Image 1 (cartoon, one colour):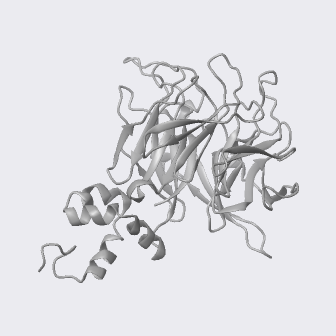
Image 2 (tube, one colour; image 1 turned 90 degrees about the vertical axis):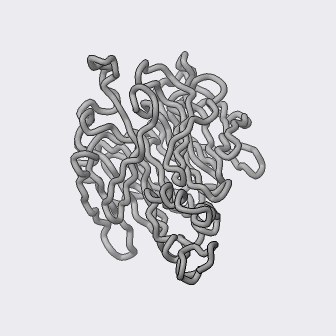
Image 3 (cartoon, rainbow, N blue to C red; image 1 turned 60 degrees about the vertical axis):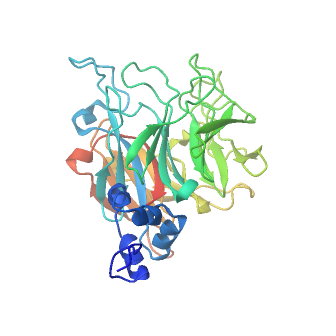
Amino acid sequence: MGYNELIPGLPEEVARECLIRVGFDQLPAVRRISRQWKAEVESPAYNRLRKAEGLARPALALVQARRELAEAGPAADKQSSAGGVPGNSYRMVLLDPAEGRWTPLPEVGGASGSLPLFCQVAAVDGGVEGRKRLVVVGGWDPETWAPTDSVLVYDFLTGAWRRGAAMPGPRRSFFACAAVGGKVFVAGGHDEEKNALRSALAYDPDADAWAALPDMAEERDEPRGLCVDGKFLVVGGYPTPAQGRFVGSAEWFDPATSTWSAVQEGFVDDGACPRTCSAAPEAGDRMYMLRDGHLVARHGAISSAPAAWRPVAPVPEDARTAAAVSVIPDGRVVVIGSDCHGGDQTVYTLREEAGKPASWARAPAPPEFSGHVQAACLLEI
């Protein structure tokens, strides 16, 4: 038996087939077994082989209220316990929508052990050693409810959180956020004086550094950020004087040219909150959102002539107070919601098939994972 064999006594290709079947929650332990195993799971080829063998699965990363605080809802009044901790506390949970498996990730540090309220999350794939990471940006401090510029990075290889470089500029809230090409982009939102912003930034988790981007053409408070066709799409929002009256326009940033371009007026209906707008990064011609109790879809390239949103299916009543809508690359649409603010969450999955009526598959969340979902993103793990 050779000292450098991945698994003594097994051919290298067989040993590699064994290692690519290790679950993401076991990767930190696998890295500690030997130098050979550490090098194997940290190699970019490891994730490529998992995907080629059909072992990589889409999952949803959810910023979710803890069960014991689920009834408080996403914007409950600030309530302190005897220890002075506010009444809202959030953690990161992974949901495998195909198997209905819920997995909590390790706790973050800090006195409260909570992720920031109203934070944004993006999944970064690739970069150094092909590492898969979750990046949590901004939000409100869970103890003081003050806007924060914090960045938290979860590395699936180490199984641990680390603090990233703070987000520069004014402490913004309710901004657009999405991962594009290994970086996390943010744009818009509002500052601590409730002034809507046009500014934009990009965070590189490999360098742990932020870079300023050109400003958007318009102020956009509470916009929606998406990765579409390798670009950062910012949908809707509203300028400072409008205060909650959403516009229907959109613009996108092309990292290759470092320029913003207007997409089209009326990309979504004026007055429509874009929070549920979603797209699969690998299928940018297919977008979904919730409108008037229905799931609606838009097909056609973003840069083409305006395309109409068409109704797909009514959203079940016990999910219409929706917290998250995600599009899986294989064509499934996942809606997570409840029948009222603060209600227990239910997961519905829909797949559109030509010539067949759209129908939902229902999967109630287990009690310990029934808390409000504050933010979500899609990753392949």
